[in-house]
Image (cartoon, rainbow, N blue to C red; front, side, top):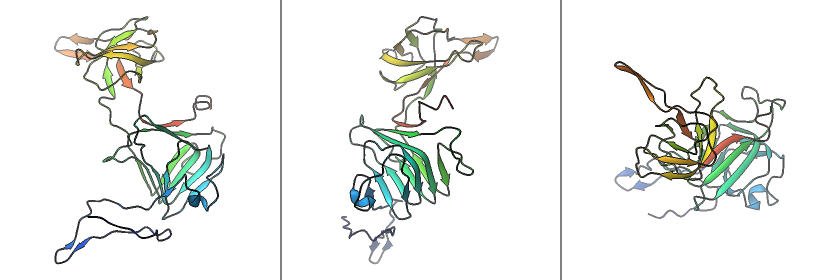
Amino acid sequence: MTCTTDHRPGLISPSLEIYVDGMGLVSNNNKLFRYVSFWSDDTTWGGEFAPLEMESIYVPEGLNLYVDVDSTPELNLVLVEGALIFAPHTDPNHERFFDARYIYLTNGYMEVGTEEHPYTSKLTITMHGNVSDPYLPIFGNKCIAVSRSTLDMHGIKREPTWTVINETSLPGATQIKLAGPLDWVAGEQIAIAPTGFDGREGEKRTIVAIDKTNPLEPLVTLNEPLTYKHFGQIQYYGDDFIDMRAEVGLLTRNVKYRGDPETSFKN
């Protein structure tokens, strides 16, 4: 079946119904049709130019703004009563960047992939500001504020996101043995939880290589030696036991929502 649309009817959100004579309406299986306005298209901005550094933008009801540019300037407020849509690039290694101080959804919709169709390339959304900046009532600052709206954000599912060390690792070690199987690959970042008395002995490393000869105990080579000891055993007490193995988490995601790294740890 082919559906041919006419020109977009202003900011009205169109609907689609398929009727079979003698049988009635056909189910659309919850599929939604949207007209979109491309960020890169000058007509989206009244025939002029896209927003500049520290400008605010308004996405009114009925407008579906499709972010198709690789990066935006640092915006002030993005007020969304319509829809703000991020669709993945065909290249899974392609990365886009979106920067703002406030994103406020009110009776609106923001989509970064859906549960059925996750975002499959790379996207980094960075929020800017510090504690002295003006607060949105109730929501605060440096945030995505959601009021009577829908925020859909789904990246590629990873399995697993957390595992444990299967063998105690000592300071200076450049390899750790993990409990598998897992889908992690070289180049991704991991966090290794502390197992001593100091909670600040957690460590972050990058995977240089991973040997999955034994998929139940993959051997991970790290970019830097460990600074601290990480315990990797199960303690047994008669019929009881306590799993004391250090947890290891995968930090790398294709969709990242973060605070500005230059100020987030200072304010």
